Image (cartoon, rainbow, N blue to C red; front, top):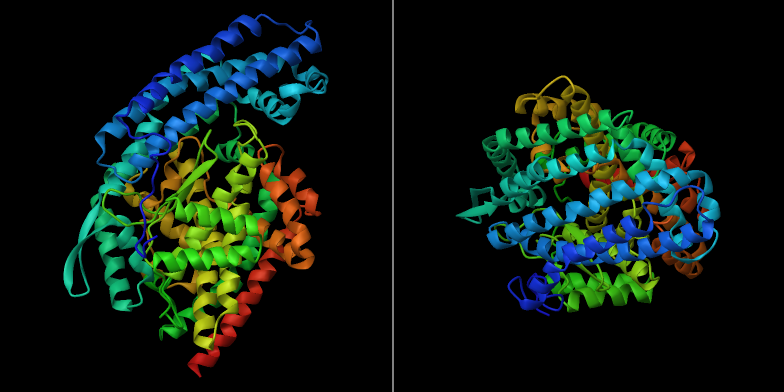
Length: 606
């Protein structure tokens, strides 16, 4: 392994997009989907409520087996294609194939609607059917959820039409956002020469050690996003308008209603967490002001929000990042460390920054292979080391499900629980870095990196929640201009960051580049991150109390996150997520970090 950031390798999945192996697998997609539909039509459609539970159990089980196989095969193809699209938006062949894939895969969505509509008639007998064992029994939760969600469906014909229109509607807007943001690049003077920086590299300048570079980066961002605000506002309006229309036709209370169901939590749980978050804002504002004082400022401008402070000499080569992560994962669990080492050494991670590549970071499983792939934009900072640890946590989560033999349906984990392992891994690495601090300056730097993350997931996420909530409400009245979207964003930032930041230097264009706003299927792609942080923080506190005996139960939890609601899974560890006290307890742990940060900042200024 070299010191330079790697590119991922998927040649063991398929030799290439033009290979006979991929072509054959691609052509099998409609055949597998047709097999699912045919089995349903011939063996389930005609069954009525007077059929025996045994017959229903058997036929539903066979149907679910075929459905799982089809989803696995389609998912493998989809994520293989996405590995090209996400790293090279100029790859026209991959985009064309993905478009063809979407045309085929929409038939699975239609079949899901048909099955839910059919299953609804057996809602009163579901326990009887699933108590008889087999695949139907192991998928009891999925079946019950299907029945519950069937009440929010339009007619079969309307749902089929919505799926077809989505290809050239919501999903097309999503693609436009990805293409525009990944192909945006600007000329920027860095290290004494003019460089063409892609948007992710420009965004990464927010953590540059030189404040003048950060300030110019901030100003350049404002100019750059201004040039693409019109197509992006059109995309956002298109997506949010579509979601509003469909939610109304499906008799949803609002967009948040479907997001809560997708997160597998209730409104009371969210309100308890939001209330605790609001109560924590003064604590975070103390942190912002203390950080501002280190720059000789009363209030912090946006360009210093994620700026490094303290000892900023720490820089990691990619090999050093690997070794640091693996070593510290081993202190938690050998299996976790071995997984991370394997991911690094077998080129599962695409870490190189380059034009045409998506910004940010993500982890995706490769269904049917037991493998995952991770994308990030590595720049050598501790923040990026933390990002890799975070994404490896997602990969480890996938690995726990693979090893437990979970099916594709059983692995449909809500966003709330999907962040559990990732934030746990992030915490392990951050705490390890903190323990190695050899001076107050170094301790301050590491604490700041932790609090940057904490404040982003609590304060900034709340601002995103407020932004999206208002956009959905105002979109019902008509299209929102780019200026109006920017105004809503500024107001949301003022409501959350308050006097912790300088109101003259906020970031009104946060709505342009965050892909989370541009999902047709996943609204409010924000609060689940906070749930994940605070839930994982609570779990980590339990681990600190119980030690190694906690780990097997934790791994089992990860293998089951797609098989129950969040509240029931949390109860395994005596956690009641419907009570504000739990969320306050996790925020109290963060408050201890802030307290220590204020002490260090005061000492350094003195």
